[in-house]
Image (tube, rainbow, N blue to C red; front, side, top):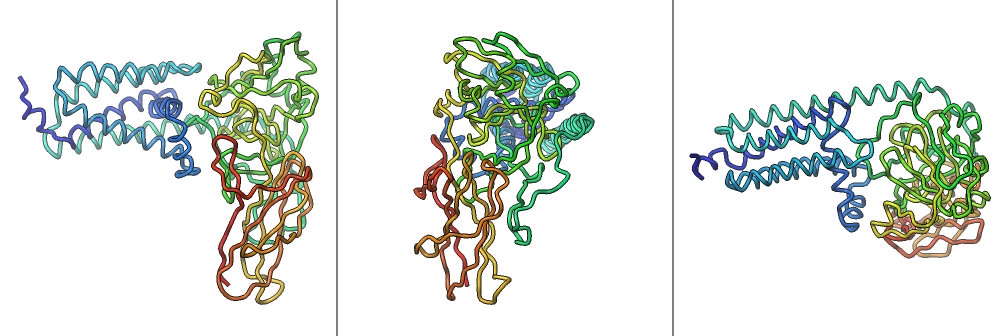
Length: 483
């Protein structure tokens, strides 16, 4: 019989190494089919985390939130293994079994159910239980376990990268979608450091609850229009492309605080939702349009403004002359210019279902409002540099947006003084962002600069600082410059 002293022989280091090894085994088995046990557990963690925890993580980690979540899952698994190591064999067995069942359930939880993820979870639980019974002896044994686990994790990541490469190859074979043969200009091309008028596809911000995008075969994918409709539709990517149009619009994340870069301006390519609804013919009682992703995630929108065109929504299949990237929703997503990204429609679109008001969205359950949240006017300062036209002056430039109505003006103030208008670049479209710049002559010392946007509808940017949850952020972008 193993004594308490025997169990402690490996110590916390040995238990931690076993955790790394078990995680490596589970991840490699899941990766054999391009899936990830870590991502599956991470998604469950995100779904279950209280809203304040999610908001704090997003605020602190920024664009690295997915990497932080993965790191948290790994660190949590190792820490939990250390805790298990302190239990007796009899007490530990049911806990390890419960872990295996819970981790396996995360693989079955998604509509895209992954047997490989379930098998990986079962294998990880088995390795965990066996490893904690037969502890590695000394530092060398612990390092051996940790090294093996790290190697397995690296091998799993290589397999996943290979699946991702195949997905990118399949997307490239789709070919161009829309055109950007002539780069649009607004007259401010000579301003160094100013954001591009059209955001590059690889530079667009990414925000969603998935840790990795689902892989979808474009040749087999179909968009279904179902529910309370007289004529259900089932459309291929080619059929959607035949009716697609181009439009310029800015997309903004609901977590985009003043001055941040969770916003991008694109030339989108998609089919107007009004046109699809005209073909499907909504029935009486169809009040909500549920946009459903391949993994079951939903965002719903009121039918009537989309049907009438009051809200110009689209099923987007391309941006800037290319298909959507996997991270941005390939092969299709719904986009209603003017709504925050969290409310504008699902990525990795599989179905448009017309239903009644009984449907409940993912974010509603998390405490966010059920009614869509509209983007408010906002100006961002990109450039504060010595003026090039005259010595002793300062050039200040940036971008502003107020979709769907458009930016009427942008104003700047120095050191809490009066607001002064700046020069605007040529407008691409009301829903797109608009670049701006000005030159100011400032005395030596430190100066505070603030910018605000005014919408063509008359709405003035709200300068009161407010957190994103639950109605979207407000406040002025404020920078300090030293002359």
